[in-house]
Image: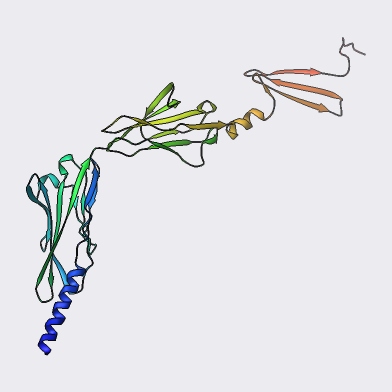
Length: 287
């Protein structure tokens, strides 16, 4: 009877661990051409079972080939077209997901994750799960303009920038315009960011961006309004201090003791001095 109990316990343990070691994935993964995609393959690690071998294979046109293999000797990428583009987490127990970068159209296919575990009594358990990968070309989405803090109303002299963001198959190119998306507009240049190191009042206006991907037509964003207010603080201070007229600086001094007023005018680059006395000026005679 004791032997039967031990067998029952072993079978129940085996069934329990077998359930815990089930692989989880999804039916299909859709990836964007030239983008990246993760094909999930996960399980709950179980005490007493050690992962021995992990293998990823792909089936295309009724042909099956091994892409990736991990065993006691390390990681091995067996198909040259996937070298430098695929990887599996190394330090995440229970995560055997396959990351594919720089997706190409021929990467579409059926991907199988197979894992072999060894138990403490040297028995082996093998599980596998298959996921369909579909690579598609996606046109650029309608771009969105984002403004850096503190917003779109700024004083003259401040710096500002706008960024353009769109989804779709990379690479995505961007262009910036001044005007209305549906009307006449001035092309300002390319790049995902439009920046002003020092704003001027003439920079006030309406701006929008355009995004174009490898597939589909170009898409234009909604317009945003940039408002530049006032003048830089330093410039305003220079224009409001003192009296400056056509390069001359005038100073009036009142001398109480002599009841005389002196006006000194300093043009640039010469200096002219005029004097007005309250007493009449006439010929002088010796007494």
